[in-house]
Length: 103
Image (cartoon, rainbow, N blue to C red):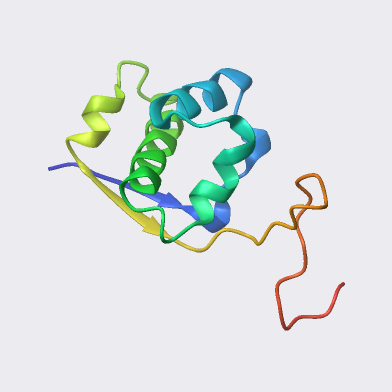
């Protein structure tokens, strides 16, 4: 069984094309503005897992154009790291994690 790894802390949203974001959102039936909170929500259950699989699919298909979401779902997805906290009032800008001082 193939293993795909997603390091949530290393995700660079700017590396995704608009088409990538649409494909990920379509796979989990969420609006683009709901994607980051979904990926960060440890309690989102299978919806978060499917979102992580979709991220793994989009990242890996750059090197393997024939790869499908079904291929990833048939494998194993390992999730590492933790998403940066997002202040909902900052229009998507990252905030300083609790307990740390701004740079």
